[in-house]
Length: 187
Image (cartoon, rainbow, N blue to C red):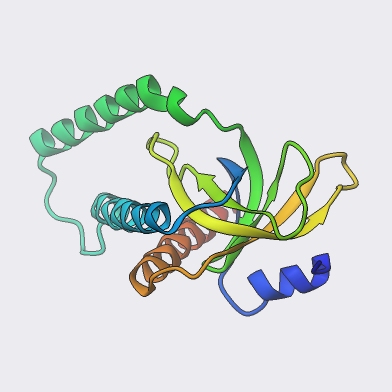
């Protein structure tokens, strides 16, 4: 069993880590090799599509002259996406939880204590408007009952394919960048 301090160092020590509140869960249970490959392929495709959408919305290029018809179509698509997401949200209706995560793993509140060494999958909704969860095979490496009464688990992601790990790092960087921009606006 790894200590909480050692787990924090292993998962968040020298990499970008983001703290946020997201619908998420740790689902205990062994994940076979075929399911692991399917999760990796789906998760990578989801993160790549999310990157295209989010980077396209914010735009890295200087502002173009306003095209009101295009902005109206984009706004209608945003509303439609939110409506479809709200209809589909019941598939994995995980509660929003405070979590700290990196490309190596996550620290998440859990409903019940699990034993260190328990395999499973980390499930998280990567965007508020997107009902599809990101699924990453993980193993609980440390457990804490929590001073506030909420048990927490430190999850180390199983070996991820390099492309998925890179997509996850980019996703976390976008979250970090947004957090900094929001804190600057709040000043």
